Image (tube, rainbow, N blue to C red):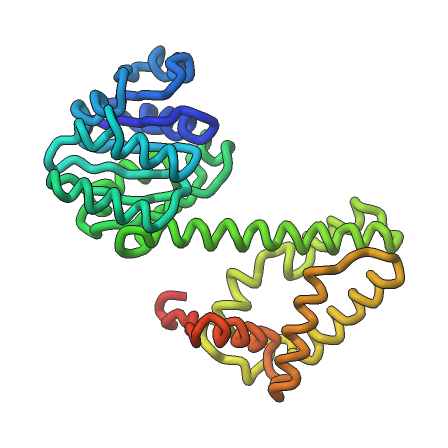
Amino acid sequence: MDIGFIGLGNMGGGMAANLLKAGFRLTVNDLRREAADQLLENGAEWADTPSLLASRCEVILTSLPGPREIEAVALEKDGILEGIMPGGVYIDLSTGYPTLARKIFAAFAEKNAHVMDAPVSGSTIGAQTGRMAVMASGDRAVFDRCKPVLDAIGDRVSYTGEIGSGTVCKLVHNCIGYGIQAIAAECYTLGVKAGVDPAALTEAVANGAVGRGIHFSFVFPETYFQGKFDKPLFPVKGAHKDVGLALKLGREHNVPMAIGNLVIQELTAAINRGWGEEDARKAMLLQEERAGNIRVRVPENRK
């Protein structure tokens, strides 16, 4: 299969190299030709424009900085749309925006070509080693056809639904991640200012439930995603007590706890609903209400 790859930066270069290692015939393009030097030495071919690359390849992948670059490479002069063949597939691995993915999907459909948005997660190390998640969306038949290509760049490839769904998943994933980063900074600074050695503090957190990642692997699947809160793993009132004590410690040591204060407000509201004895995850229903009574529920067989 002839594969094209556009965007050979920190992420794209590693992914393109893994496609070569997997045995695909590869044509590449980048704003800087020197970014392709190692790939060309290893057997890849060069195309001067995205349009020319697309005219040579069955599947074209891009790894680009953001929506502006994605739209330019896909739709503007000398872009992929100009050169793609009927039946060809364009897969964007970048973190873009779902509305843009749908716009590109519609434009390519007019040429009987296909589009998938398939953003990746795993950092530059993952791009080099192939240990990455790929969150793909678009036509299911096109996904099935292209899965061997995606398997060459990531070890956890999932189909998320219609076009744009993959980008939504990636944006949700990253927002959760940076939210965790923000509360972690708040709490680690609290711990150190309260007198704990940083090495001891970080080891203790890593050894606990948070550090072991059981919220995503067990706690949420058994409670929130099922809407089951009557057999608490830990009750709302207990969570309220613990967060309240952390905030008291923050006041004692003059550590700002902006996110912690938002958390205690949610837990207080949950107690005022009469949920104090139920599982602490029931407080998450407050956000579901604010979002328009959205329900985040996963069938038992999908956990």
